[in-house]
Length: 309
Image 1: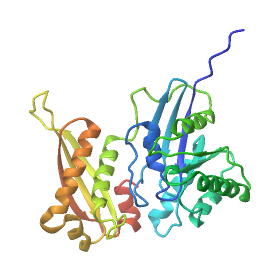
Image 2 (image 1 turned 45 degrees about the vertical axis):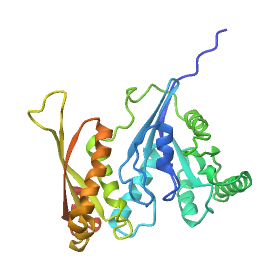
Image 3 (image 1 turned 90 degrees about the vertical axis):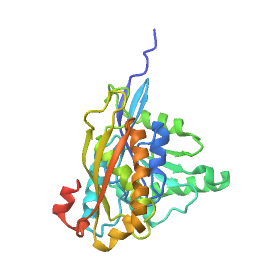
Image 4 (image 1 turned 45 degrees about the horizontal axis):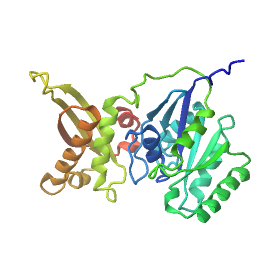
C-alpha cells in the first residue's frame, strides 16, 4: 500500500486581540513581508488586509479585521459589524494575547464575543514571548486556558510565539493549516496580499501621517488616494507613478497639526510614505498630498461611504 500524500488545504484565518497584542507583526512574520499596517495605536487597520502564506501543502490566507471595541461612534458600530461578519466567515480564529500583559477586561470582552461564534475553531496565540521568562509564560498559558473554560469553550490550541525572534512562528502556521479545510490554492503563487494597491498606498500615507501626531489626533485621519497614474512621456526604463492623495481631518484646527510649522510635518509624511510606496510598488513615485477638512467624518454615514467605510 502506498501512502497518499496529505491533501492540500486552503482557507482563511484571522487574528483578533486588543490593540498592541501583536496581530500585524505576527501577520508579517507568517507572510515574511510587511503587508498589514503595524502601529502602536488602535484603529489603524481599518480595511481587511490579507496576507497569504504559501506552502507546498497549503495556502493560508490571513484576514486582518479591525479591532473589536465598545462602539462610541457610528464608525465604531460599523467596524464591529465588519468584525463579527469576518469571524463567522473564516476557517480559524487566532486570538492574540501578549505574554507580558495581564489578561484584562478588554481580552475578556473579545473572548466572550468569540464564545458566541460556535463553529469556528479558536487558537489562543500568546505573543511577545521574548519579553518574559519561562515561569511567567507558563503562568500566562494557564490563565489563557482558564479564560476559554470559564466562557464555556475550549481552545483548539494554545501556542506561545515571538514574531520578533521568529520563535514558534512556523509551528503556529502548521497548527493553523491543520484546521483548514482541504482544497486547492485560492491565490496565485506570487500574491502576498489581495488588497487593492490604492488602499495599501492610502494606509501607508495614513500610517506616516499618524506617526508624529498620535496624541493630538488618535485616528481622525482618513486618506483617500484620488488617482495613481503613470507619468506620460517617460522612457520605459525610467517610469514615474503620479500619486494624488487627500488627507482628511475632522476639524480646521487639526490642519495646522498635520501640516506642521512651515509645512515641515507634511513634507516628512510625504517623504516617508513615498519611500514605503516605492518599496511596495517597486517603482519611483511622485506623491502629491493635500490636507482637507471633512467635518466630523466619523459620525456622518455619507462621508464614511465616500471615504470608503
